[in-house]
Amino acid sequence: MKGGEDMGNTINNEALVKDQYKNSDNLNARLNFHSFNINKTDWNQWFFEKMNMPDHGNVLELGCGNGLLWKKNEKSIKKTLNITLSDFSEGMLESAKKNINNENIKYEVIDIQNIPYEDESFDVIIARHMLYHVPDIDKALSEVKRVLKPNGKFYVSTNSLNHLRELKILVKNFDKTIDFDPARDSSLFGIENGGELLKKHFGHVALEEFNGQIVVHEAEPVVSYVTSVISVLQHIIDENKLDSFTKYVEAEIDKTGEFTTSTGAGIFIASNL
Image (cartoon, rainbow, N blue to C red; front, side, top):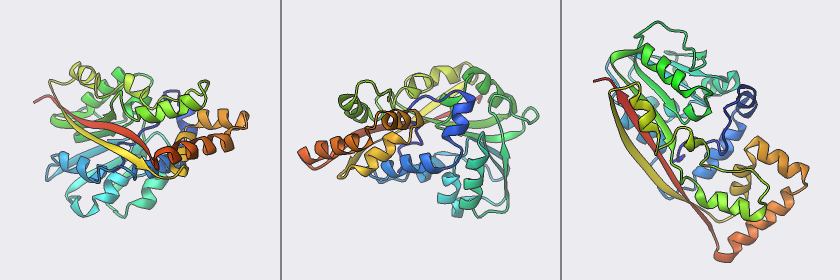
C-alpha cells in the first residue's frame, strides 16, 4: 500500500513541481513511508481493480509518476488497449519507462491543463494524486472532459483532510515554524470536496475510500518522508536542525515503541452516463 502518492505540501507552482519531481527520489521516500501501513492491500492493485477497463480502447494516465500502477498490474494489462502514460516531468517519465516492461505503452510529457489530443479521444483517463498540484483545476477538469469519450470514465484519486494528521502534529511539536501540512493539498482537491468539483463537469460521480494506519518503529522513514518535501528540507538544513529532528523523532518513538499516523485516500469515478 502507498496510501496514495501524496506530496506532503501544496506544490502548484510550475517551477516547484518540476523541482520536486525532477526524478523519483522524493516520491520513493514517501512510498517507503507508506509501505509501513497496516492496511496491506496494495494501493496500486486496489486502484487497478476499481477500474472497469474496456477490452479495446484508448487509455491516458495524467501524472503517471514512476509508473507503479502499471508495473504492479502488468499481468492484468490487456494487450488490446492503447495506453499512453504522461507526466509533467521528463524525469518521472524516465523512471516509468525503466519500471515498466511493455512495448505497447507510449510516453508523453503532458500538461493536464492543455491536453494535446482531439475531442473524445479516450475511453479511460486516470489522474492519481496530482490534481491538487495543478494551478487551474477547473481548466484541467474541462480538458479531461473534452478528450474523454461520451461513455468514457475518469478515475481520479486523492487524500482526505485528516491524512497523516498525527505526522503534522509531530512536526509542529518539534518546530512550529516548519510549514508542513500533509493535508493541505486536500483542501484544493480532496475526498471532502473533490466530488463537488467533479460534478461541475461530470453527470455521475462515485467515491471509493481506502483508509489505513502507518506504524513505524524507527525514525528514518519518518525523517525521510518529512524531508522529501523540498521546502521543509531546506528549512531544516538552513537551521541546522536535521540531527535534532532525527533525535526528536527517535525520542518520541521510544516513548511507546512506535509512531502511528492515520491515512485516508480514495478514488472518484466520474462519467457522464
